Every structure is written in C-alpha cells, then in structure tokens.
Image 1 (spheres, rainbow, N blue to C red):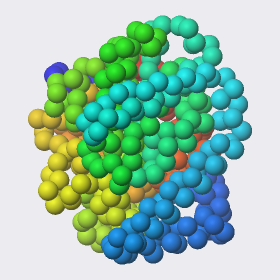
Image 2: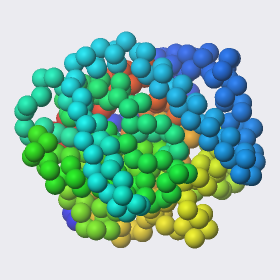
Image 3: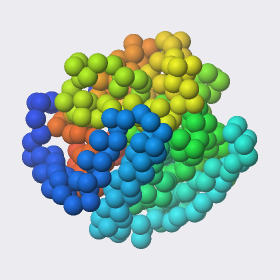
Image 4: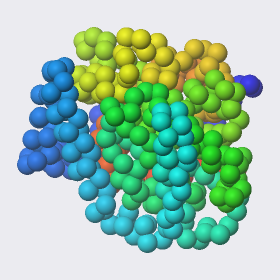
Length: 358
C-alpha cells in the first residue's frame, strides 16, 4: 500500500488544563457524578474493581451496566438529540453469522430525511461504547441521529454481542461481518461502496480497531475508505505500573484490568493476540490497515495507548490524522453538550468532508 499523506487539519493547542466550554462541561459532569445514585455507582465500581473473585466481578459488571444506562438516559433527554431524531428515518436489518453459534447481528440505520431514497450516500458504520461489556446500539441513537444530519451520512449502528457472555474475538467478528455485509450490499442500501467509514467510541473503538486487524489479515482493507477509532481501548497498558500513568489513567486502571478479563477467553493465551489487543498488531499488519484517524482527549484514560498506536500507524504510512481535544477527559468526550460543540461536531464534519465525502 502507498503511504498516506495527512492534510494536517487538526492541531489543537494542548495546555495541560481545561479551559472555556470544556471546563464548563467538566463542572457539569462533576456536579452530577458527585452525589446521589451516580456517586454511589462510581464508588461501588472502584471498590469492586479491587477484587478479582467471581462474585465481585459479577457485581462489577452490574454496576458498569447501570452506569452506562444512566449515561444513555442523559443522551435520550438532550433536546438537540431529540430534535435530530425527528429529522431522521430509522430502519433495521440483521446480518446472519456463524462464527460463535448462529446469531443474527442487529443493525439499526439512521438516514437523514433529506437523503431517504437517494443513492451513493457516504456511510458511517458505528460500534457503541461501554467497554465492550455494557450498552446497546440503541443507546447511541440520539447522538448518531444528530451526527447523521450534521455530517450528511447514513449511519449503520451495529449491536455486536457483549462480554463476558461473548468472548473475544467474537464480538469483533460480529462487527466485521456487519461491515462485510454492508460493503457487499452497498448499492442496495443506497451507499457508495467507495465511501464507507467504520468507527466506534471507547470499547467500540476497540471493536473498530479489531475489525481493522481482521480486514488487514484478510487483505480486505480496500473495502473501507476510513477507520475512525475515538477514545479507543487499544491494549494491555492497564496492566503496567500505575506509577508511570497519567492521573486519569491511574483513576481507571483497575477497572480496565477487570474489563479486559471479562472480554478475553483467556488472558494468558491471548496476551499477544491483536484481536484482543489491537495495539499489538505487527508492523506488517498495521501497514495493511485502512486509512485511519485516531481521535483522543488530552486527559483521556486511553491517551497513552492510543497515541502509541497512532505513532506506529504513522510510521507504517496508514495514519491520516491524530486528533487530540485539549482538556478533554473520557467522560467529557461522551457528554452530550460536548458532542454538539464546535470542537467535536466541527471536527467530525471536517473529517467526513475532507476524508470521506471527497
């Protein structure tokens, strides 16, 4: 593959602090999460993460899923997202798979009303967040409907199976099969087969990157014009020494250790498997990745592992951009108010305009 040339469109100045609207979002999140049920759930999650017995892990999973349900509720109640839902059409189809039993992967499709019935539309295939252990595709519908309108794309929201009920790499394969199906049937779906982007946030970013590994392994990266992992889980950095971590990485590393344990079939035997840890893909595999833009927050809990992968992708000639939002944590990046801000929404529109639509 030829080396990619970045347009170097995103060079946000990083100051080591949150300022302006980003600081306001941080204050909103702190106010909500520091009292009542959100505070109790957060405290319980950190407490349970200190233990690795089966009962604690089961309780931890319940708390993580409850926490994700709370964020989904905030999403649904956000007026700009509610308005966007009125201006998009929702359809659904299922993709038959057999890599882990017979399972039909549900895919929701959000099409701006102005694009319904048209052909040759750019597509964004999305994997939701939640650490790959929580959440449902529909939780992301409010934001994705807004994004579909803002960026003039049709969004395919893939409801891949979660861990620990489904172990790696089968959750990645659910998404991979959906991507293959959409690519193969692009014209029937009204999509330009040459303008398909795959992406995901947090745990969905891991699903996206794992799919990139599969595409590279099968020489299928040409099916995708762009990969867009956002604040992604990348590798086993959480198992390293917390003394070398940033403050935000240290605050979540024990939870991440438990989450990776839930995702993996066997941590020891899969320790070097890029379908569990995409950041461990070989240089040869990375050189066959689709064109990739990595989106991060300055204070995200995955900033080190994401930037390390971005550096390797740049060296392999497959990185288009590394976008780092100044002052942004993991929680801010997922916050509804931030998603409609010029920093985030403007960046997403520019990414699609410059790297997908053209």
